[in-house]
Image (cartoon, rainbow, N blue to C red; front, side, top):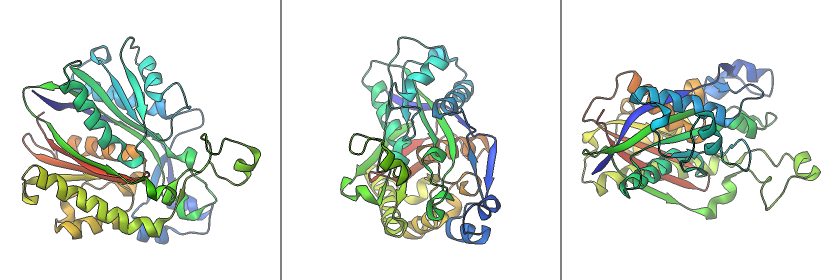
Length: 326
């Protein structure tokens, strides 16, 4: 018995924030942003729209692509670091908006690596024999965690959601994963306040501690190394050569990071699906949105081996090996 990806879907808000817009907000330029990140624009959810709203649209599109109705879904897993609220979970809110009842639905947090973790969790839900079909969703409103006075981070982040329908099959589609983390790097990438360590107060708001903080220069080398090693680990684990891989779908944090991973692996960057120029860093949503785009563009054929790879706060990192069955 195996587990396959039966359908993919994504949703991006209509509002576009360009590099030119940032020139009027902070001390930066289109040239500076593009040269250092590869980002030209990003999508921003309008006021009143939250992660569950993005996620439910991506989920509907994934179900349509799979040729099923939402009523056929038996569980919902949602990766997010920008939930609608602490509780109930964003997954439960998506469940309600899909009109579903009496199925397990839950969130988890693995930051930018969230979709990769979710795919492995969902695969094992099905392999354990209790469930036949489910939704793995990654939905993020990163603009809500963005300090638009901090020019080093505000230009990076955008909003969006991606989803896949996974189901039991005689074929093995989600072949396996390599996942890892190291919490000792906590303060290189985090949102300091809002949890039980630093609950919301006048002081935390005044000090802007509810926004994402990042040590970009320190993360740069770690990200390249961790993503490169993740691809190597997955190839070794399943006795594959890099030539066996048709497409790599990486986390879209920085174009220079993706280029560094390509150099480290000695794989042409043309084998990496890149859409960072349109959407920026959407945390966990980057990989499923990119996967959906690649599939819809016909870049993936039946029998192809794909690798998804990501790195994010935690720190977390990893890779999935997928054989495209659809």
